[in-house]
Image (cartoon, rainbow, N blue to C red; front, side):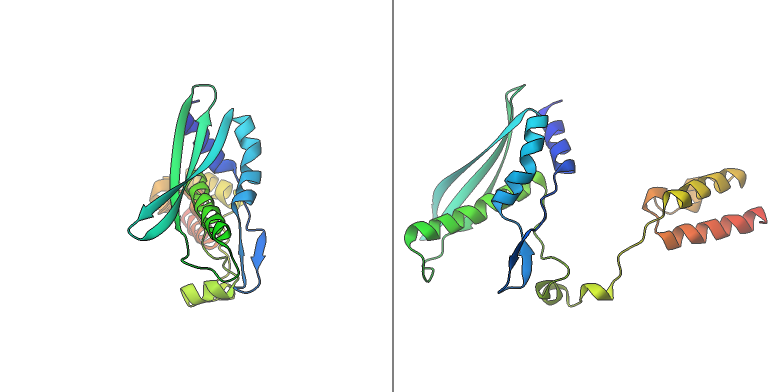
Length: 195
């Protein structure tokens, strides 16, 4: 496996839940430590190492922390790196200068890891923040029910009996059908077969 294939495997497997809660903002979130904890078993499995480093970058009169997350393939000595920036606040109430830099470093590292491992960082759908961003609450939209294996198997068998190609009866891949769409197709095929 090359480094891209190893990264693809890790991206597909890693689950880094938002296990921390901000009671002031009323939303769940993840931090860099949580991401690292989720990634470590896959690094070992894929014979990779991960390093994170920071650089201080001045842009005009502002100071940014640039975090670099680098995935190293120990078998083929190859790397993939992602960087992210976070700006230091000019002043943060109750923090000394090192704490301000540390906060920017934590943010930048988290976003570099999010980018490397394809972790989204949107607000959780059941928070007030989600409602503010989207204008709707989660309860307004029930989760999509996808076609079960039984639906899919039934459609395939009936389509074959009716001599109907799947790509003609399904407007999308059969695995992406909703339960309602699958039911409609089954009813149509039953009608076609005179059942």
